[in-house]
Length: 360
Image (cartoon, rainbow, N blue to C red; front, side):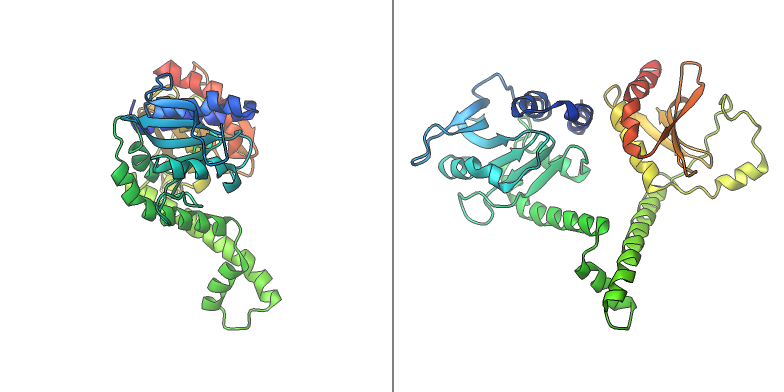
């Protein structure tokens, strides 16, 4: 299994099990140890590689422990502090990491709740852990651009110099991306005023602020959707393909010229792509990610195995007010399940996996 596939597999596990994990110990067993062993490739049962409950007395602080220390050549390389998966991470949780970072040879420290992984180093001052992470991995929303950097932490590809050299750029690029994402979700007054001043000549009064807050949010959302669609069309060869499954038991009417004409107007939406990624993440517990593909049509968005329209995994019916996820049985008879949000697709994970297993 490739490195990126191992992250996807763990991300799927986190998505499926996070609600059942209530304690810090459960978080370690279910998410943290698999990340160290399955993703990074270290033997969690070999004390020469991974030391649990690592102790290094610091001044008057005696007997304090960091949850894990990853070792190489007898030296501490990475310190890991864990918190329960249901709680949000705060810098206050890293007090022991700060102290241990100063008295060990570690250049990397990790604060995690098993879902979000924050990676720290000492960019601001030598041998003093920074207050802000240089890299943040969220297993519920994996940024694929970070995967090559995380791979540098793995046992087989460990490259400390490369990690440290890239840390400053990663820190600020990541922080800017998160700030942009926050503005897209809920624009601040400064963000609204910035764009309003470039398109509106009047004074920025309270009434104008209220009017343009909604307009800026709408415009940025549409811009993001259009950008995704343009990239899909480029990357996927126009981004749309007509599903030509003649054996489809649900749409048995013959295809007409009018149908073909309508299909030239297909627009793949951001919501369809997000739903496709959810189905793909579920399917990747059975098969490699590259085997799960998509085809959009006027009537529905199809998720397929091996780009074969005779191997449908799911169909997304998102073109009406009520959204449905269509699942097919062994006879390829489709049952449509209404959903209010795309997250509800996870409730049908077992059926999706069953469909993949039938073909795989």
